[in-house]
Length: 415
Image (cartoon, rainbow, N blue to C red; front, side, top):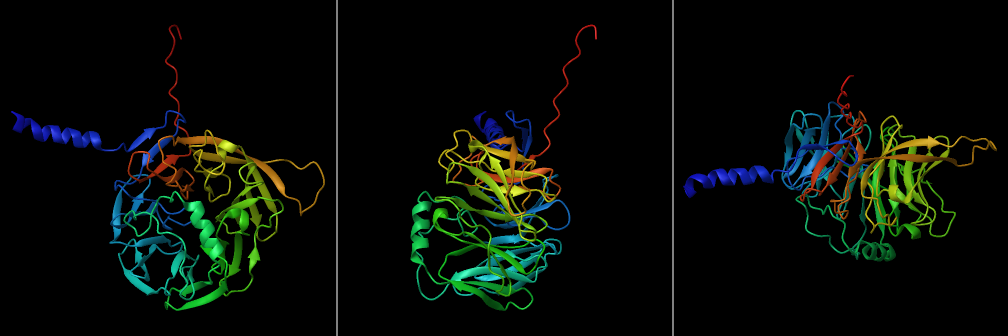
């Protein structure tokens, strides 16, 4: 009898162990969907493009390669197998760019065609692909100097850790203080040729091409935010170096920069001063106009993002250990920007103020924020994509922007 019951019991336990695929968050009324089935799968960093140019397709990393999923149907398939580092999806072609064995590759998500573009410089890394898929960009430490940065915890199948190390602050201070010589370089995607476009002893990081201008690169001076002028742009030929934000207050910090979809505005987290007053700030690179949207402490987020039409923002919240020290900040947020009308002096050089009106999308109380959720809107702005360990292992999720319709009350007697 035991032998007969054992297979059925095991089957029941396996079914019970399957994580939920979809549910309506009881605290927010929004539908949450688990997009990926592979434990250890993850979406990209918040400001990198994970969406293929045609269809409802999101690329994501797994412990065994790179896959693509339709966020409406959950249909997925693997397109790259093996230990690789996903960079991002192309904006012009259905290509997925990644690093394997010290070289840049792309694979066509439709045909499977794969091409080795070229070898990275010694100690080099690539982080971004430009709008017309002609250039990649990255950086490296020059010479033999060693970074004092400790190695992060074991990788989640992709050659890098998804979780932030507990001593990140100390590591950042040490690496910033080292003042190691660095270079920013581009790689020609047709020939594999590399070219250095900028050198210095600042810690160059977070390279991000404009989504529309193939020749414009956003990057940062990494390090403790209160000690660096963080956000910069430069042309892909090395000209036009420009600082995006200038500090005007002691302990003012700014960072986690990202592009608007039209490539006109650079948005970033701004705090005046650190941990006290919170803004989502933007600079229109064409007009010079600055817009600052205010947030409450609990609404501050590690990362923000913007919909393609610019009408909505989202944020991934934070736990009490983050810089905002928010007592109730563990939520995925939707934000609606609201400008404050100007009834005073007309001056184009003045900052245009506003507020972000928050709506909670997902309760993240069971999420360990050492894994940053890294929110992004789907191209149609109907879903917000994020990664989470709320179910134990890391998976990719999406939450519907529109709340579920509440069931109507049952008719009363006599109606």
